[in-house]
Length: 101
Length: 101
DNA sequence: GCTTACGGTAAGTGAATACTTACCAAGAAC
DNA sequence: GTTCTTGGTAAGTATTCACTTACCGTAAGC
Image (tube, rainbow over all chains, first blue to last red; front, side, top):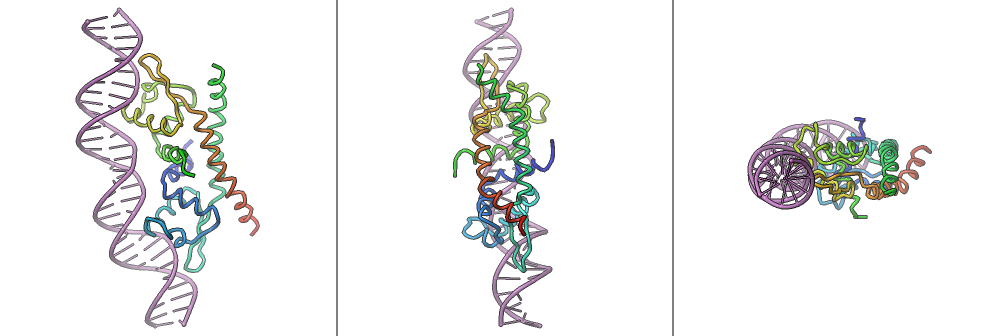
């Protein structure tokens, strides 16, 4: 399998991006709010958001001069499915083997 | 939350490491087998395995001069729980909001 | 119209990290 | 014992990638 789930895992492999996702759990936020109080600059945040967007982990919506970002449920669902598949196929059978010895 | 799940996500953010995990789905393998046919050298594989081990995604077991690596069901379960928590709390409520408008 | 706020993009820099080669230790085979 | 296999580690290099500053476009407020 070589779909965009690979991209999602790459996207999740960065602390700042994970922090952004955490902040978005409460609801949509404009970029300025997202960058507020962070140690990195706003452009850096924009770049992270692009990565997250390409990975379908967030979506964006323009509202005037602001741009609201929010979690993308579809993308997350796809990732979850991917991981569940991984676990389902390999790990349960595996766990069994481990415990039987 | 700032446990080793962070490490796990960092560990998953690399193509080669994901490939190693894929290979381990079929069962335990020694390092040589894991590195076999890969574009990177065997020491590189060893280093990746260390990262995966520190993230509790794999375990190792010595068998003579060989060392067998296998998926770590416990670590994967913890990660799954972490992600399910993330999704459970945020996304379902979120999905609802999205669909209602 | 002018100005201010918001945010994306480009170009360059710096730091993290994946990689190589060389080396060494431990066990198996003889 | 010697030799061969297996694999971890060290040191250095290279590449990726996160970051900054500077700039530009667009929409809102006046």
